[in-house]
Length: 194
Ligand code: 5GP
Image (cartoon, rainbow, N blue to C red):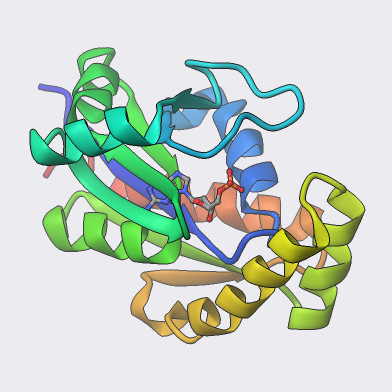
């Protein structure tokens, strides 16, 4: 029987975790599918509904919370809710694939707590807070205010790194990608018979 795994990538915003997750999704040997989160934040740039996120109104998001539809959810930034619907994980496992998550630190740790055996929780560490600032500014997707909000959250998030199964330092992106690939492959292979 297929034994579906959960691969969590968490990091402060701007650490490069999304780039790493996208890279891993392209590797057929890993057999991964992306967990599309629900969010109440506004759509950014060229994001696509049902591909990057399920974009919900705050009201609709709160309805799902009441119905206990979420595996985990978080008000990541004020009035910006993000969460993983239980149905999303079931959908991916039903396809015979492992689930990969690009979620915030608290959400990642919550999933690990719920499924300790099935989860590999990876923390992606930026070289420094200053570097994080530079990356977020370069991205040009958020206002100055929003960037500052993300930076102030980042310090607290960095402190949680030791709670993860492993830490990948993203100083040189290519190295981080390779390290991520081998860690995920090893986890999936070692767990096949369990
Ligand atoms: P962004 O607005 O940049 O897409 O995401 C902001 C933060 O929310 C990121 O750290 C992202 O990983 C996190 N996030 C995305 N989806 C989820 C989710 O389903 N649950 C939680 N807890 N965080 C999420």
